[in-house]
Image (cartoon, rainbow over all chains, first blue to last red; front, side):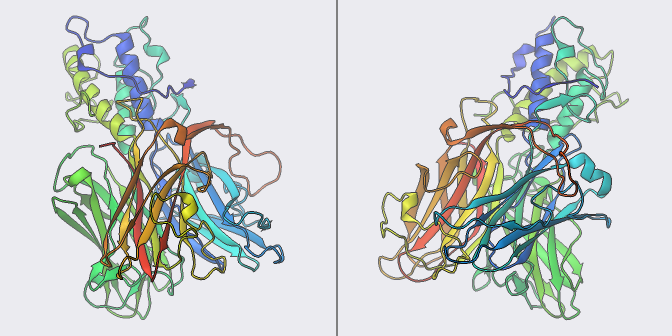
Length: 368
Length: 232
């Protein structure tokens, strides 16, 4: 195993560096390796939340899928607002974290994988000294290799249980994001060491696990896998707060409804990899945390409409029958890239054969 | 701003493949030479795209009724909004949210340039007379940076009563970020003793906030997203 520091500056790359008669040079190879490392390792984009504020004790759920195996750490943080009443008894607060995968494995808050401060330990909230100031409750890091040794499924879900002993202390928000790497390690699946390709050494094809152009090409594959989380939206898992509907035909969810039959829309900007300015666009997928009361079978529809161009794609998550909060299976879709400014409007509607269909989290991610 | 890229990645066989379509396989000097061009294009495209992403997506506020503390409706600053807890017992409840602390990366193909942060959503402003919905996006340097001390802001007002698009943006500069370089403790809410040491995290970080007020009546500001995008 060899490591080196990741060079964070993206080099200028020009076609003309490939010169006939001297097609590939060492320095030329180094710049390609450096660029591939930055994209694959230095700028991961998968995230959790941030969530919105919570008052009384409640739970947020958020999905997460690791970019790829060479992204090693996930940072988590939560913040709280002190009780605005300076004479209130000092309350205790906690965030308890459970992580599950899509094949039934669980990491509980008692695991050493869960960061301190996310393990349910009660903290005494500070007394308010300045009203408009939220306070860091905890920050912690998850070793993704250690977590993946337990969570063998690829799709993970975090459950954050916020608790307060009383008063008006409130959770400000929870956030999570993959950490940029500062190291390149040839023991990882992606990452090209630049040292062995220095100008004094021969330029080699090498292999995907050692050095040379095969390893750079492999690292570019990691760059493509470093997709975007377009939406990570969560409501408390409370049917009185989360959006819901009771219709047998597709309608917007209450609390996700502008007026009449117009649902809320989220504006996002997909990454272009293979399909620029395309009505079909790039591959993505969507899943929901949902529940259906009354024995119904629900369907949730995601509609992606490119702004300006008006290209539309839809994806239905059907046969949603869980009577308790559960994640749906992923539904594959594509998201158009032909919008003005490449913008896309995402809307969500649903229907159910009986009872109330509620949704407490939406996750939309790029899926190359 | 896109330089030296055809604007899409060339599909190819997996690295290391024995296929004759593997341009980088040993003893394929001509194909590997040609593929330098494609590699340059792919890396320039993916590099530029790597700067941009969605940073936050929150439901927003279905009841924006609280007036601003100053009553001002022009040249809005953070002090014109209440940055108070939603669940703090205030009535009407304030409408503000932290949109998280995020690593900000320079534009790969123009390294002196940072992206712009864009807050979008849908808003229903007041429908009566001169009444307005006010909103602001604030960029505060560093992790957990607070809104009211920042001068990096973009805010405006809207009226008219009809649902309309919200869009406000800040073109980021290096002074809006603060560098972190920290060696984290990994996990270990579950045992005693020193935690395992993680890999050093180095990043330029900015924290974003948004807030809203209504000069009269109930407004809504929903479907909020914060994205990093190219500077037009």
